[in-house]
Length: 410
Image 1 (cartoon, rainbow, N blue to C red):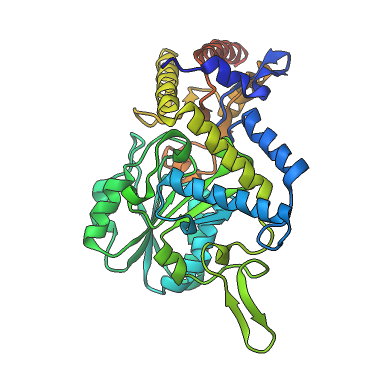
Image 2: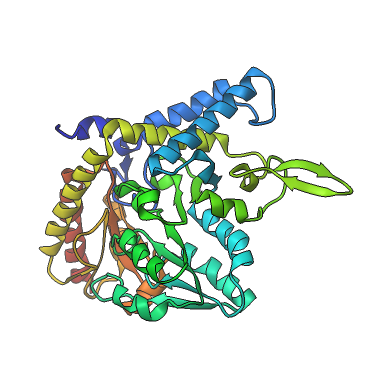
């Protein structure tokens, strides 16, 4: 099958616009992917014709809206190969999903003297909640170290985990280095030694790789909709049902209760609704469901082949530029981070923007990685299903022009 890149790009209207009188070249999809028109058209249809409160009404609009929402829960369960739709909890995003686990499961099952293991390549969203919990409950945090090739030093894992390790938190794919971690292998190793709960941050991996939570055998998996061609403000926490059943709710309100009595207190709803207090982001859920439909229509396998071709093409072109420092090592998944000798990342990004090119610069919410490499920022390009070779060629041409300009004025 020939990859339908022309048709796909037609489905993303934002790619037709100009920035600073140049065609937009969007190479910041790791921060937030663009949405195909099918997604926001479905959101508009829901908002204009189908909107109602869910789970609370007997009228037709309410019953239909509830069905749309719960059908999408089932669709996501199938997308992740979860055992049941009851293992899918709607949250605002990966960050909220991690915090939910920290404050519900972590507060109740990690005690003073225990330890949590995270990695040196985590996004702040998978560091800060655990640091807060550790400070509050006097829990030790241990770190799997990073290597200069952008991989984790997994050989050190046997020296890091012990009988006091209650939780391993690991990114499935680094948002800075493009490293794809073989989490299935890691989980097999540690679960042979100890009974350790595992949370995976899948915010980056979900869009570039097939995810099978049963095969991986993780206990929790989180991702955000806006990185998966869906809307912002919606995400998913997957959790094994037996673990979710054992966790108390972390927010109280409507929707997460079975019965409330002023004298005898409250009884909570079953999972997943126990963790979905208040009115849900129905429009966001509808949009996320549409994004998954769109991905399935194109075909995940076809998308992954195309993305690998584009990222390898970009890597080849970047390697040809003198004095470039590329962080991490092949194979790269969906993104490449780099710096140029004597030129700050911010200057590179600012000038490229003048040519209509959107890249990411800064610490990428991963300061420990920056400190490991003894820098304060990196340039990052990231691709998606709609990125083509013309985008890369134009970016490389203007990057070389940017370098020449900076060398003249320095």
